[in-house]
Image (tube, rainbow, N blue to C red; front, side, top):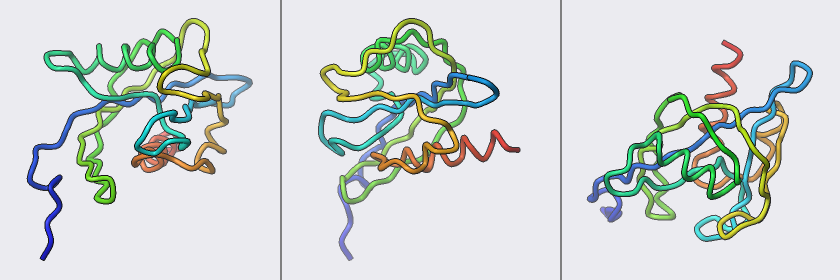
Length: 144
């Protein structure tokens, strides 16, 4: 039996943001296209790692600003256990929701593109990590 190293380490804690914009009764979600490995050129929710001694809420505000240029006023949504054996990743993802402020920046050090996608269409994108699962749950909870 082969065991992955990631199963012997504590999972990392990360953050992700489901940032929404509403137009004519339609919800649009912000997706970013990764410019860095792993998962270069794949789409994901803005987010990233929590620095040592940083509050999760501050981390998601910082990550959203770094990746999109937007201000973000987060509200905790849910957490997800993210295991990606092929990438040796095990993380607990703290997901926050909210609406943005400011102007969207579509290209920077970590992101090659950013788009507002109709929530109904967002699951048609090629996602990094397990962001598709997060978005599926978010979408299902909206209907409930």
